[in-house]
Image (tube, rainbow, N blue to C red; front, side, top):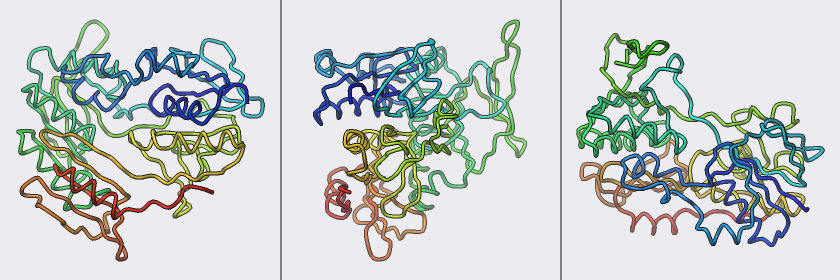
Length: 398
């Protein structure tokens, strides 16, 4: 294998390049990225970077010496437009063609828009550093009233940052309890109460019906409020849409790969042909435990998958299975939330220490007499101990 093309220059793509080198691959590595930026870290985009307490350089995932040692050929500011796996061809938006013996799909995705809000000034999504810069400019211009659509982790983190900036914030959530499909009603409610603790208005069961706008220059409009299905209107100068992401798979049309809410792979992240693997938010892999295809959208997953994908790519067949740790964290207001494992709303929640009222606790999720997940709010020490002791991952070897 002389050339490996990694399509996607975010965390998953970078970790794959690093794994190629650490697993002994000394051939050519080409890293293709639609953004013009070298690989950078996304979690701070909703927190320190958005607040202005972290600069652009703090986001970089590589130091200059690390970059030289990695020896990667960067193709930045270009988009992959087609993949021909049989011939190892990747067609790029600048008209060039990249030939590779192995291809890694690490294209992640784009923020899911709210229909009817496209092109309205003052309405934002948050996925890239450029998104964060545009949003930060508006948040720090005067004292805008902020409405956030979606009370998931991104929405909650941005709400926290906005309150740090002293802004008036309303969070709209379609569910009756945020995060309940993942954490269940009790722990979802515990997360929801953090908003009220810090002066954020949270409206649950709130369905957005449309926007109120005014003329903004000769050809555009600017948001002035959000209309709800129940007839309420929430004034807004800035609106953030935080309702998830859409996997970036359009460029794979006609490739012969199975695509549907991500790129379908086997349990070793191999996407059909042995020369193509997928990692990160775009990878929809076959679970070792259930056989069902699943996809995760978090930092740890993108980082953990790289080693398995590279081992199988270099071997030419699946020699390792991917078994996720399920570790996720979120910093909101003055609280750190941590999750490990794979909870379900039907699991029994057992509090090991602390209480939701104190906003400091650790709880486990019990299923059929076994601990399947651990959840903590501001108790990292006990969380880490339980995570190591209670959640045992099966061996990844095939």
